[in-house]
Image 1 (cartoon, rainbow, N blue to C red):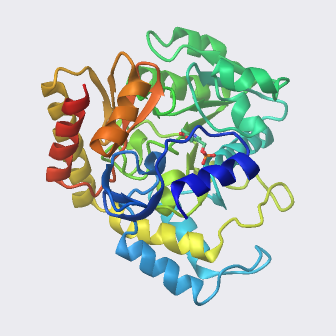
Image 2 (image 1 turned 30 degrees about the vertical axis):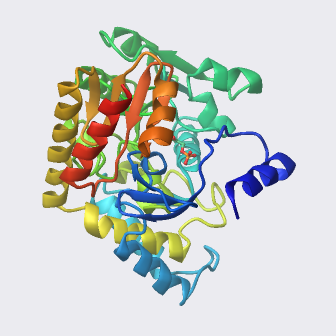
Amino acid sequence: MALADLQALEREAVMATYLRYPVEFVRGEGTRLWDDEGNEYLDFLTGISVAQLGHCHPRVVEAVREQAGRLMLVSNFFYTEPGMRLCKRLSDSSLGGGVFLCNSGAEAVECAIKLARRHRPGGEFVVLEGAFHGRTMGALSATMQEEKQAPFAPLVPGFKAVRRHGPPLPLVEAVTDRTAAVIIEPVQGEGGIHPIHPHMLAAARDACEEHGALLIFDEIQCGMGRTGTLWAWQQYEIVPDVMTVAKGLGGGVPVGACVTSPEFADLLQPGDHGTTFGGAPVAAAAANAVLDVVDDDAFLAGVAEKGERLAAALRDLGLDVRGLGLMLAFRADDAPALVRRALLEQRLVLNATGPDTVRLLPPLTVAHDEIDEAVRRIGAVL
Ligand SMILES: Cc1ncc(COP(=O)(O)O)c(C=O)c1O
């Protein structure tokens, strides 16, 4: 169907939750996308850090195809291998405790919130300003962005935000014996790519220890190798009690996970939580295939090195760059307009996380010459 036909369908039958660019993508391979007229684009957004191995990575495609032809879904009343294997791998590669599989980032966060409430019934939550944890009512309550929260009040009570930068004292003072958990993205994504200072993470760790609260790291955007280690917190050696994962985990297939340390693995008991599609074999097979590639020291070192190359090349353009690994952003006066020009004039897919921030989330498999070409195109629209 042509773009104009899709736009007509949108007007007739689609909720107006998204502002779309006038581009219809029909195919993807690696870092490349093609529109309905055959034009080729470089994708430095990857569905907001989802196509972790690029589009249609052969191992992910093969895993999905094989599993889809064998068994797509039975309920969690029964055992299936891909989901169990995925839980074990996620646990072994991170906190060593229990894993709950779900379908999205917001759902992973909801699980973490419920887990924390089991840990400390009626307990409160401390989060950072600018945080984004999702759009469901619990996750939205942790998402400290006024314009996203305000229309949907009243939210879940008990969430308090403290500043994300500067001395950690406000955070330390906010954590009390009534706190169920502190929730932090080690690198804030939607808030504009803000690596949280290790001092803040360490202070959160200590405060949680002192008051018996859970430390939850939301690795939904910064995890799965995005920053050059499998989990961003591994760079700081500050270990959370609970971690949420989604986005790149499935390489394009919806799958999320909430992971605990052994101490908190049994907080949720039968009947406490569930989701029909959690651990579905096709999604789990895709995630296992992504992990096969990403959970590898040489691959992750390559991500870090490519991140440095991209950041250095952007700085050579005179840009003010921030971020970690292949999770980068630069300041631009009119970021939304720049992103639009990059897409429509240079066929480069980027994203603006605000009026002055352009975000880059290329696939972890991006090639050096693709990095150089993307930077050339950014230079052309500056
Ligand atoms: C850090 C973080 N947490 C949670 C979410 C919500 O994930 P989802 O959109 O899959 O519900 C996002 C999505 O951008 C995110 O970046």
